[in-house]
Length: 519
Image 1: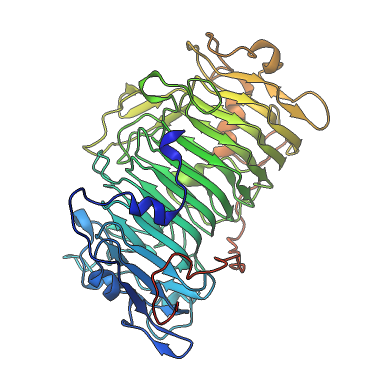
Image 2: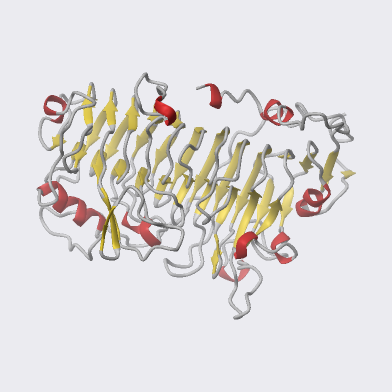
């Protein structure tokens, strides 16, 4: 895809110069002290405030208790950010991925402190309620790059928050106001879980309301109550996520109302409740629905009408009920590799899916009970009272390899599941393989009856055994007690995963103009 050919962060930003403008040479603003040489600033927010388009900000190893939200109000009345970026085309880079910490905990506390008393929930609103906090937020400016650092423990409050690293193109507006962006060698985590209804960390790396081109690569995220990774609220996201590793979250990946040019590839998803989930929803991530069809009748990367592709991922062991969970993410069907919920025209291609107790790939409708915010109007769905019902069709599931899937042993648990109404085109399933033989499926023999793409068909009905199992697995209508034929693991005690050491940039000075830290 021509729009997604991002060669490197520096090249991306350099291509965004304003025609006819005379631009000064980029400066290097240094934060902290590196190898005995003091920088220009002691906080990242101060450096960001001083930066001009094209400048670099280098961050020395250290624990930065950033508090930009106490001096910079959050945009549109939302929770603010420890570091808020509203200047286009600046480069933010840490000199050590594992030792540059953008930390939401209280000044004077230990790095990424797990104590409840160490958590900071942001400035208070007029009613005296903490507003919540985001970590690093890029708000509606193009060409920003963020590299080689870790963000931790930014939690929700009365005005939202809970996003560790956020490329925000207009959250809640139903409009797309963010262009090119780049993130690499990033880690995002939380070391504290205060409860499903208490303040918490919602998302690790979050992208919303973008038209791209955007690229997120070589990243890790864990311990999120919603999703380690999120791309949403973009009809043509023009975004690629690759080299990601998501662990110990309700959802490894979540994508609400995201589509068009969007590729999630060559990543690992494990120890979550559900590995990958994409859906339509009648909420503030407008406009709905989630639709992977290529814009303007174009052809996607696999020669089909679909431009939203989940390919060559390793999805395994997402059977963990003891992850942090809250909100609708709490309905994630534990034990499932990929869920396509209420969306359409997505491609699931050449993934390895292993050790999943419930289903490998599950296509289901999404009934959103509402009430919706003013920006949402049930586009692409069927209004029914206060609910908006999104069915799921046009998906192409092909050439995936399964091993040891469905071991919970409930009826319909297995490699493939299709719960959908009659549509033209319906979903198609072909050339998938199971190490033990022919892939199992519900309804039976999907790869014989639904092998052809682009033709009308339907999956199982909402009165089928598959529907009964999905309702039990998600507990969408209430508790489903453990009994024979309805056995799904339930939360006993939330456990958080320690942040592992991750591979950083080999040479953090590469591409940076000469400066005292990079001579």
